[in-house]
Length: 244
Image (cartoon, rainbow, N blue to C red; front, side, top):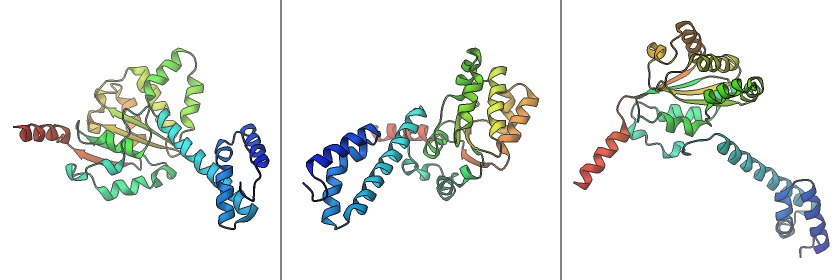
């Protein structure tokens, strides 16, 4: 056993850590004590290593939890995105967004393009996403709308994927507007759509509401066009040619 810790001391530390809900320290106290002694760090160095390990573990657990809560259909990274297949998308611009400054400045990000052009992949790579409108409508029916709206307002970033394929019922459109309006200039939104803004009345028939929603989404927004040619479809054709 390390000179910094006796077996009895290590056992006591583990019990205290369990009580204080510090699982990382409980699991690594012996190993880190040995490392601290080898490197002649002393008790303060050992304590610093313990706390750093706990913080790193909590940060990783937070990331894992948030990804799980996001209900992503599939976790994709920006490193996996093939910019060669999407020439209209600027890799440097996406890299700049990935640094997160738009979140601090509460600037919207809008990806516009046809199906298969990489919108959802880019959205997933930048942030977390969730079934916002359906949850709000259900909360309204259950008289829980205020509570759910409050929870969504606490998120630094929300993502709304594929606006344009399914028309929104009036109540859904109104609730979506309520969320977007509450976040205007205070928190970031990422949104993908297959429709140009001039055709959004297909999704939100109430022209006045549609205009007000677009006004807030596009204000100070990063608008990125991903194109009209589906590289998923092109990839399928290439595979068929290879087999032939």
